[in-house]
Image (cartoon, rainbow, N blue to C red; front, side, top):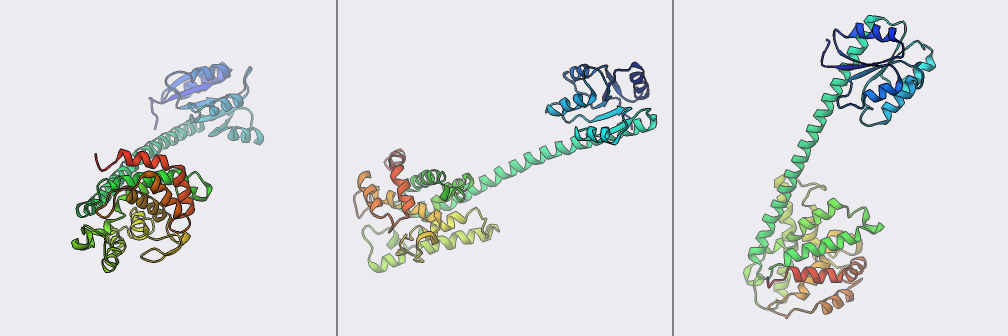
Length: 365
């Protein structure tokens, strides 16, 4: 079906050929004319582009092949369908036209019915392609919107779970926020090293940052007389306190199952790893599993440094806060025993960043 809103550019140096095509197509389409290659390229500089170009090959100054090559080399014009209309009927001529990006090749003398059919077909194909492209753009926007919604749900879920630990632990304060930023600083730094670049992607670091507040979520399961005891714990009490790593893992796993996210790609997987593994030690002497070295998830190794540093510089009922310098010394002493050596090396480089984070989110604010 013809569409008088469609614009067709006819390019030919012979007036007779131009007149023939114009008379053939003007009842159905809006026609533009160019009598040379340079004039054709000038015509497509206007604000409104043609929807299709009928292009002769043999022209002085610039042949149709060169015109087509230039059209296809510019993003603004490369999607305009080009149909060669020429007396050159050799296979190699036709092949060259298609190689340059033409959508069709009509030989002279033309058949009016063939020209009409091919023009109509390629205009319809172009319109269908544009509709599909527009639908893809709309779909991409919907996917982006949905992704943002999911990210918000993830953040809210994690914050809601973390708030449980905050309400029960009288030592939390800004500890949760500080450890978030410690972990992110370490992860950002280590991501620049080949050893960790593949695992510490920007997406992973963002999830680690969101997940860090859940490292002590298991404390909700510890009895008050132990969790809130104003002094050091007995051996039996400490054995119960250590169960918070298991309780944390189980709580997060239950949340994953409720959300239908209990799989390796779950957005809570790092929270689960951190809650369960941040008390493991590099030499295998930690708890609850006694894991050692790389068997400890990298998320838990990062949190181990962040959590211990913050515990050292923070006031507790059973101890005064250590200075930043003393905390750094103790972290370094734990290199290769308590902590992953790579994590400690990164911490040493970033120790002033840690000091700044601690000052920014001090419990006194």
